[in-house]
Image (cartoon, rainbow, N blue to C red; front, top):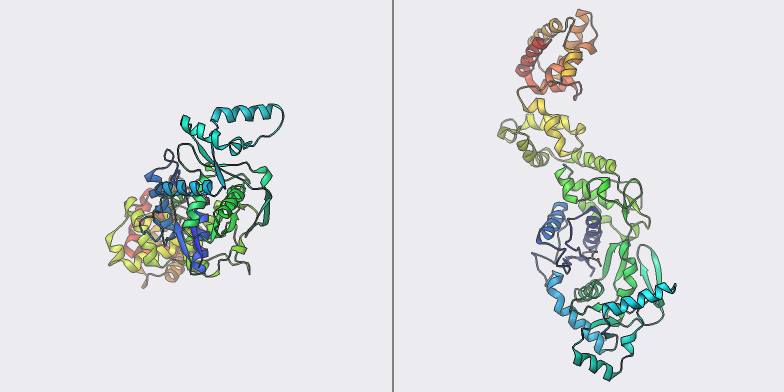
Length: 483
Ligand code: GLU
């Protein structure tokens, strides 16, 4: 049974890199009927906060990445907050000391610093000289009697530390380059390596999928698993996400917080689809559009590329448009309502008497919207009675010449039309233009400004049809006064 985890440190919001790591873990679990565990690594009390934990949970919920064990839902390996597991980590450290795999180190920080600086001044690199591993029983007793603070260091065995990374293939580190690292500090708190391995062992993790920045930590962790007599999980290190300038993604490139994209009107479906393809591909064909369930049906770790992935905001917009186009009108309406309310253009009858009309308006606007947040402005002239006129558009297309007269003729012709549908309106307009001896385009431009206040809109005759006979007539009359 596959067991994977997302183990964020709540020192910041859920950023796109973290979300992608969570997603790959979640997908692997869902693909194989495994379990996805959420563990909050809040051991850095100063930098962690409850708000950040909430933010991370919000981000995961928004993306629909539900966790099977973890905060709020609990599970057989509680607690899922690492800060509540510190006593267990200290016990594990003691076990390692008792089995001779680790030892107490009484060296003071300034002693170590002096040794390091001396070695570096002599042009060499320094790693801990194992002074405390060589202490006799009397030396130790003396230090204990003095009440000297002690840390626990792991005794790094000689040899190569090989592991197979499911993304990068076989990797081997030479233990000669790894110093006896501290696993429990003198204040009794575990270091990252100890807590992460201790928890992953206790929580029975089978796979560790995380960012590439943890590759260099992996040999130390492999050594700890071995010292604990625990099975080493399978590792998959996911390449970094870069900006379009090939530099590590940062705020300079725009929003890096997942929820910031939510606020900007990106659909969770689109974000999820976009993140999935950031460094992963399904292998066969060039299919790009997937729902969450579809991804869960095809995801495999061997589709993760070893090369860094580039975060292209235009691609995200493309995914957003594609997923917008696929949303059923009631679903789209549900998501738009709060935004239209905020813009002051929501009417309760959009989900009641005028539902069919509202859905038709959305269908017309959809191909032009990149984000949910675009709809209020795009459809402003449908949602408000008063048209907001773009002065330049009025100047260019309504003023001067005989525009007013032509609009009057057209208004009369449209008023007399038996049916008020796009085909009829178009035929009538073209006939009116021909009789008047002007180009149809000239009249279309003027009418567009009259009905929408702007020079760009969806198909004019569809717009007029949806505005309806009365509103169209009123707007043509009003525009004649501007002309
Ligand atoms: N809390 C660590 C981080 O956020 C997790 C490391 C890991 O996945 O092993 O980087």
